[in-house]
Amino acid sequence: MKMIISLIGLFLCVSVQCMGTRVQQTTYVAPEVAQQAQRSHGPGKGPCDWKPEKFKKDLMAFIAREAGFTEGESRRFFPVFFEMHESQRNIERQKNRAFFNAAKQNMNERDCQRVLNEVDQLDKKWMRMKAQYNSRMRKIVGARKLVKAMDADRRFSRRMFKKLTK
Image 1 (cartoon, helix red, strand yellow):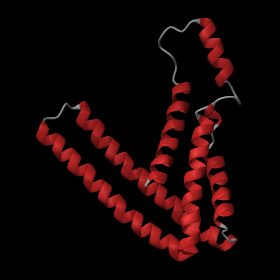
Image 2 (tube, rainbow, N blue to C red; image 1 turned 180 degrees about the horizontal axis):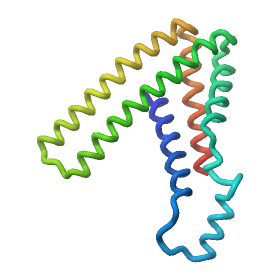
Image 3 (spheres, one colour; image 1 turned 60 degrees about the vertical axis):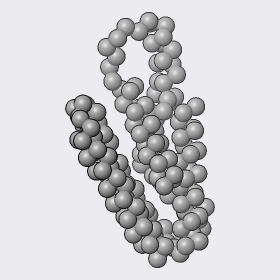
Image 4 (cartoon, one colour; image 1 turned 90 degrees about the vertical axis):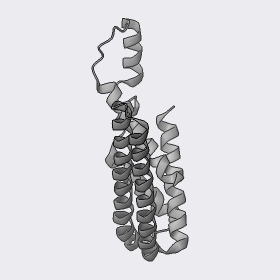
């Protein structure tokens, strides 16, 4: 679960940082501050040079190397692995939407309890899905390599997060 949360945090952080630098500023910024920001986050220098395709390719290479996958195992494992992550992102979006709508609409106690129950159900749904995905991946690469792959995924995400937040 921590691995998944780390990945979500990484994607959200990168998305927010990239979006933040692309949004046109509407508040006054002193020229020297603007120049400093331009120098530190200009082309080739900032976190928005992050490319999802490169991230995915590097992640696949790192996991395959660390877990000791054969070429055939990699070909079968990664589609299931990325399908699992997409399912997780979809559930997280649903949870975020539920919380956002509840907070925005200033709901009463009973309605907020309904939102919390919905989020609990989504968490349970994710745990069932995760168990199914783990079972599918274990059939492809075995338990030992799956554990190594999950650990490699977690370590890669932590390293990328640290690199992007420096």
